[in-house]
Image (cartoon, rainbow, N blue to C red; front, side):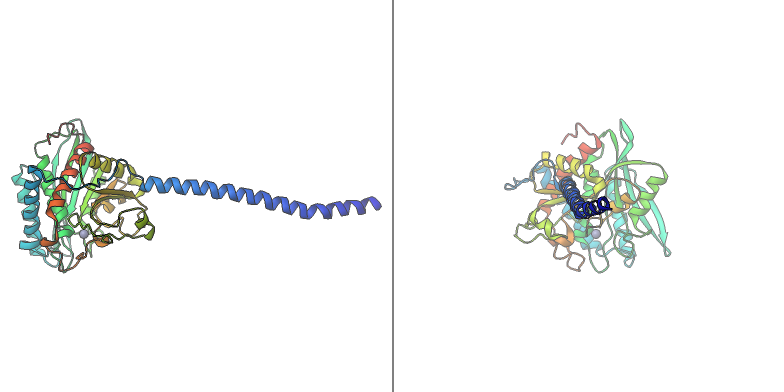
Length: 360
Ligand SMILES: [Zn+2]
């Protein structure tokens, strides 16, 4: 009887001690978990924002002869698309077709055989335009450079995306007759803008789906999206997340390479090459595609098919005051800087497509 009482007392004493110990162990586990989580988040964050090389910060050197010629060609293309032709989309179908014809004829003039991929939505037929240089060594591996040539409703679309369409065309001209190891394609996409955006009627969705159906191995896709507006003014650059403005510049004077997390290595490869060869400010990031703006162009369509894709952009709505307005006119584009960016892209594309002697 007595012994039982003692035992009971011991048990009563032990009970709060046990709870305390349990509490301590749980606290320790929680601390370890928080530390691991912290390390994982920092590592993830670093892989998303840590880029190879350094952005160019000095004064821009004088334009080379080649850059001057390219600047003039880009200006002519943008003025043709956004000035002479103007608003071009499903509501301005005649103009959309005129833009397609202009790009088609320009590709042909550069020596390419142009493929038109047509599809019909609501009784109107739309065309993606494609030219190809077959790879010499790894022809099954395909690098795609593309930009959309339609403009949003109510806008002549000089920067968005006359610049991307013009750059796609001029890059095709620069690569004409070259012999890359990988297959290189230049594609002018139709219907990127609403109401087709993120829908089956989007030109790049139709195109990327066909790649998948044909079991094509797209190893890299670069979407040239709104690449012609630059400002040195502090505060001219905004970001979708406030945290990003403590990491990235406040001057909108750089070109950016944006991918989703799965396309992280393509972002780093492309920007590393751009920075090696180009004296022009550049920033890169591989962010979750849920973050506002990250998926806002034709690279999204390639992600849907499991292909790596990145957007090269001046960040459009986060910098350009005339984004999606009637004032997105050819005079707003900085052709000098656009030419510098396109030459840098030429190097990056040469590296991505395995052109060891680009002759540039
Ligand atoms: Zn656009």
